[in-house]
Length: 281
Ligand SMILES: Nc1ncnc2c1ncn2[C@@H]1O[C@H](COP(=O)(O)OP(=O)(O)OP(=O)(O)O)[C@@H](O)[C@H]1O
Ligand SMILES: O=P(O)(O)OC[C@H]1O[C@H](OP(=O)(O)OP(=O)(O)O)[C@H](O)[C@@H]1O
Ligand SMILES: [Mg+2]
Image 1 (cartoon, rainbow, N blue to C red):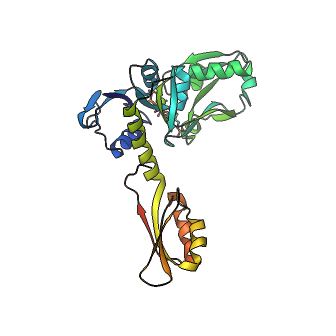
Image 2 (spheres, protein in one colour):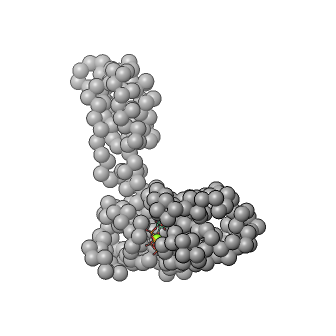
Image 3 (spheres, rainbow, N blue to C red):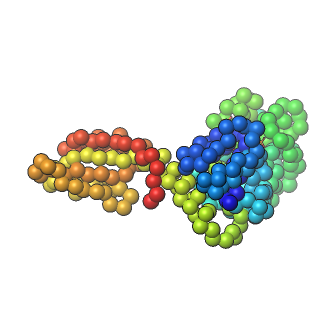
């Protein structure tokens, strides 16, 4: 049975569970459940703290985990990213009261509070800066106000938490993160893992693409197909009305409206867009 780690709380919990549900797996209904078996799909889900997931997967006791790229790198665990999910995007940055510093070089001898000591210490070492790094579990923004640190390093998404604490980011982002799927480093080939990954990739494609159908005069089909090349090649079928063809192709959801306008302007009609419910490519 495949053993998979899923975040039990935080920013990644809901997106990961939503994705698994869409991929046809059972998910827990009660947030107190820590293990859930999906016998039909031969998968066992372990709901763990997001920060612990890389450690479990790195130990080889679990086959697959959902976590953040920042948490994976911070942990130093023997696990590797095998798929990025394009969800829960954030940057990891230094911040402090306005004017406190402009780059990592200004942090020599200063006090930095963070929940991600692994990431921060590595970044400081690479910059050749020596500073005092204090580990806090959360609500790191408050550390400066309470005098425990001069600056912080934390996850920034909208920047609201920093603004509310009267702080500003400085320097280059330490890293960019998003939700990722990880496996133990050097894990062996496993058909069950491959099947699981195909299901997840199917969900990503179904979310990113839509199916577009339209009719166009045969002499303009080459132009139309250039606008909708599909993933491999669009399907072109004859219509009962002479001189017309029907075209079917996958297009990126975010480009669908612009493509419809362009198709219309070259004479395409009956342009329909439908959701892709599931797929294997
Ligand atoms: N506001 C946010 N927007 C997007 N991603 C975020 C945000 N906050 C945290 N993350 C990401 O979510 C992942 C898990 O962190 P999160 O802070 O949600 O966990 P948590 O439940 O608060 O755990 P902990 O109590 O250990 O902090 C990390 O990869 C982090 O980058
Ligand atoms: O830029 P923003 O949109 O404000 O998001 C960033 C905030 O979200 C996370 O906090 P979380 O809710 O996980 O609380 P925590 O500090 O207790 O982990 C992170 O640690 C920041 O504080
Ligand atoms: Mg957090």
